[in-house]
Image (cartoon, rainbow, N blue to C red; front, side, top):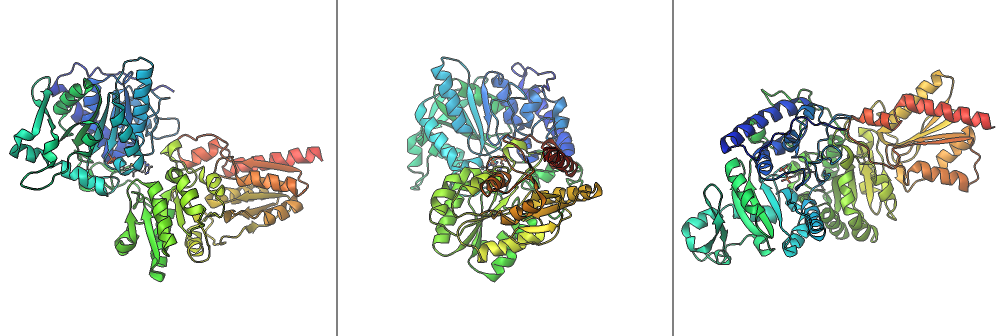
Amino acid sequence: MTFEDNIPDLHHISDAEAEALCARLRGDLLQIVSQTGGHLGSNLGAVEITVAIHRVFDTSRDRILFDVGHQCYIHKMLTGRREAMKTLRTFGGLAGFPKPSESVHDAFIAGHASDSVSVAVGMAHARTRMGEKYHVLALIGDGALTGGLAYEGLSNAGDSKEPLIVILNDNGMSITKNVGGVAEHLARQRLKPQYLRFKKGYRKLMGKLPGGGHIYRFTHKLKTAIKGTLLPCSMFEEMGFTYLGPVDGHDVRRLTRLLQYAKDIDGPVLLHIRTVKGKGYAPAERNPDRFHGVSRFCLETGEPVQPSKRDFSKAFGEAMCALAEEDERVCAISAAMVPGTGLHDFFERFPERSFDVGIAEGHAVSMAAGMAKQGMLPVFAVYSSFLQRAYDMLVHDVGIQGLHVVFGVDRAGLVGADGETHHGTLDPAFLDTIPGMTVLCPASFAEVSSMLRYALFQCTGPVALRYPRGGEGEYRGDAGPETAILRTGGDLTLVGYGTLINEVLQSATQLAELGIEAEVVKVGRITPFDPTPILDSVRKTGYLLVAEESNASNCIGQRLAADLLLQNIPVKGIALQNLGNRFIPHGTVEQLRELCGLRAEQLTKRAEEVLRHGKKET
Ligand code: TPP
């Protein structure tokens, strides 16, 4: 896949040209994202810093790590992918995140927060060990700085003495307003230039900027007192960084000078820039949380082209509010994803029982464990792929003690345009490995509500409720957590769970038109999994097709195949249709299901093959 067009040389442009370029890029970005959808606010805020980076560094050699990676659009536009931007986030088109397979300028894949400094330290070590010469930079937001992994990286980076540059893009926002003590610390840092005016003696001249201006480093004394008040010194200096800033992150001249200066420092540097999320587009500046990630929208009004429909997250949020009314022990935890997980109303209505911990999934799980141990009913709503971060906490803090923590596992299955880093296709496998875990798979809004009630009030131990991005399909029933026969038939057993059951039901209708009567079995609880109703059905039909929107490893199809063998049940034909053991790219959910043979027509063909093959052999 190549998307190359002309790559402009920014090393020799003037400041005025750089400013004009920023204005043009911002306009182009708005045009493009209003058509494609994507992460708008963060990219609008990162225009100047990205241009400044490209003025000073050569990203084909120097390594720039975009934390989360959602702010890399300008970088893509400057590295030969301007034209291809109209294919952004579409199947076969440009990814919405950095992708080394797309361009040599993309140093590393990204999608999850807070790992950029760790990766940068690794690359810096590799460079030194291998005797090579290039620069390593990490661009990380203040939101990503709420994640513990960021501190592991910073702590090591400061200690390593390796030359590398961490650019902290501080806009006061995660997706919603940033939370926590570090956000407070950064807010206090912004006051420093005022202290400078009062106490000139407490700064040390570090050097002159090429083209004018001076660089100061605050001396340790600054933290001790102004008018008798103890002032905090930048924690980054304490960690071993040369701290530069805070500076206006929309002043491309200044940013360029500072990066030129930082480039020559022989050790870790932290450049703290202040930016405005959504900069230059009034609707986004007014509502940065709504413009963090957008679908197609009208540029004039900022309104989405298609109004949003009710989805599983909303159904979950409504069920949470209803159950919280009934029981005061119910509380909600979010890791910086309150609107995304449908908890907005809950947080408004029950502020004392609402906890946004920042991008700290591991902490959220351990905190929920503490709450559960002391008698609360914590519900942690989290995207499936971000829960991967907290596997050890699930095992160690929740699982071993069998604590009753409920997980609202949102974005389970294929998520579409965000692609491989965001698909929730591994949780059925990894949750199943935790002894005592229950995993429920609602397939309709009604089931979200009834299963959440069941999870909170009838289950013990940890319970996960997994549901997909988007809305429900034709199936609107409520079969509860037990396995249910949705359609009877004697020719073949078709098994599915979650909203994929809609494709399965449609396939059964298509098979009926071909004279094949399929029995459709919907599984409500995949862990602990009770194969009995399915085995009974296979005893009758002799044929089994299991369709799953999850990876092959430890899927229920594999578990059923083992059960059939162990229980000596004669089976004439069996097929497991799932995502295989691979990472699935971006595209619409329909396109990706097709890629994996999970559309109704494909299941019908597969069923016919299984029956034909079996008949030949008997
Ligand atoms: N949890 C993880 C581990 N990774 C994620 N990508 C998210 C949650 C979802 N997420 C994407 S961007 C974002 C969040 C919570 C906010 C990031 O804020 P910040 O780093 O300040 O960047 P900004 O968007 O403000 O530029």
